Image (cartoon, rainbow, N blue to C red; front, side, top):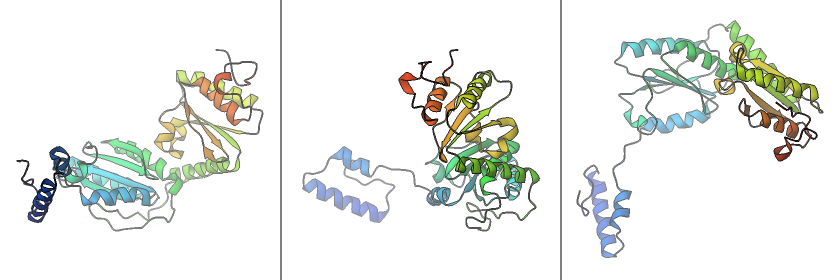
Length: 300
């Protein structure tokens, strides 16, 4: 394209407007070629579905986004299995099915997913992703759905491409009911306590072996009322979404119901600092290594 011709991809009306604007700026001596052309440089056309999808992430508690090749038998079988899980999860779910061949405009603005694969968004945030493995998807969706199980929330639209699938009226899964009850109890403890310390751990893990004594010591020495909860993630993971348990062993702190920054196994000192801070001792930061002033500090 020469510098005084509109881009070939423009419509006739846009080309006319471009030429008129170019002529006006050139006559006024205000035409900076590089800056002006960058305004009109060719860009991929954004799929109209993208805006709807991003809006729905904040509108619906749970969004399931499937990435498929509709010409593939593998994708079609994957779709059938995933929809069966969705229809039995017991919570309102909005489902998007993206045909990567048909919705190319959408993927120019998002990272290209594997096919087939599925992503779960809970509360507007990515909660889980599964490639090929429907069993892994079921675990992630079950955990994400626990806070919303059988909640009458969100519009219930009929099934169509790029729009939500119908929720099932099937009977409640006993495991889901058990997980929902346990999660509800967990949430009640968080909401009713001034301080809650939660330890997510894995069995037969050397980092757990380091963190468990620290957790027990803090529980025994805590000078203020606090609740100490511990969960073995491979056993209790249906209660939590994968973001809460994937990095175990780690700690979570809740102060008057508000979640504080996590502490993972690499930062034992930070756990003691956080205990001193949240338990009211006021000893943290540069004083954390002072064994006389920090009741939670243990020499290793």
